[in-house]
Amino acid sequence: MRRRNPVEPVLLMFPLGLFLVATILDLATLAGAPSMVGTLAYWNVLAGLAGGIFAAVVGRPRAAILLADLGVLFLFAVLVMIRVRTSDRTVDPGLFLLELLGCLSALAASWYGGRLDPNRSPGMRRPTSRHADDSAGITTTRREAA
Image (cartoon, rainbow, N blue to C red; front, side):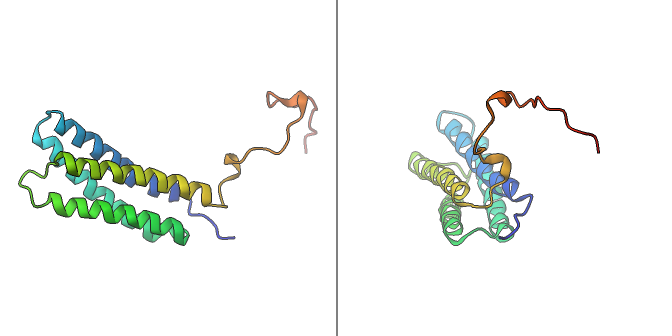
């Protein structure tokens, strides 16, 4: 089995958080916030793309996870290329729906990647059985000091 990179979960969640914040900022822009908020959302998407590419290079996930992640990155790259043509980098309702679709697919890809990974940490696995008198995690037997 391959050993996991200990910072891999942080590398994967950083772009996801940036994409979600960009979606929230774009929603605020559509609701009437100043156009500077939309520009900030644009820069969040760019930072998320940079972090996503770095995570794809360093993380070395399986092929199915990598394809899903690269699909999400491709979708957000297309959004950036469309938004760069506007003067204030804001989004219209059609692009916002595409961005929302990108965030939902990013969430689905991260969930799928977590379910598919056989090397999840033991803390995430459920124990197979538990003693009836140890339901609170307190043992009744005294351990000998070594």
